[in-house]
Amino acid sequence: MNIRKAELKDTTYILNLIQELAKFERQPEAVIITEEDLVRYSFSEHPLIYTWVAEIDSEIVGIALYYFRFSTWKGRSLHLEDLIVKENHRQKGIGRALINKVIEIAHTENVGRMEWEVLEWNQPAIDFYHSLGATIDPEWSLCKLYREDLVKLVSI
Image 1 (cartoon, rainbow, N blue to C red):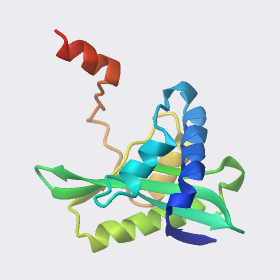
Image 2: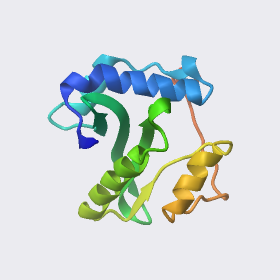
Image 3: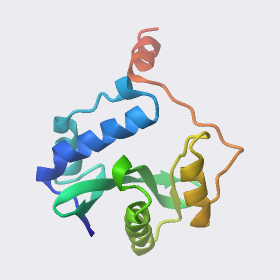
Image 4: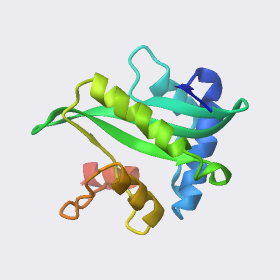
């Protein structure tokens, strides 16, 4: 297994894995991002997102996609947006290798916090994150406004 920084040539594979995750999370129609978006936000002079890939025999079998954000309590933080491993490659240490890479980056960048979300029904992921020593906070709820909501709100 090879863990490396994503390259422009990986864009199609990254989007395919994002779509695979959406199917797993029972929301396949929710993905509206395009390859062009990934290129724009990943490989520009000032990228908004960063991706590491896991390869086995030159096949991309997993990704970790993250970005930096700011907490008024903790300062600069790292948000792991997606940790995805192809279904037929799970339970092989790929997810652990990818998240370890992101943990290393968070440590090197001296962030005040690293965070991510997990669906409440995804018990294998919850167990995995607990094994890392992660805290899964039951007090906070995730709030969202989607593009169509924003359009409605600004037109009021």
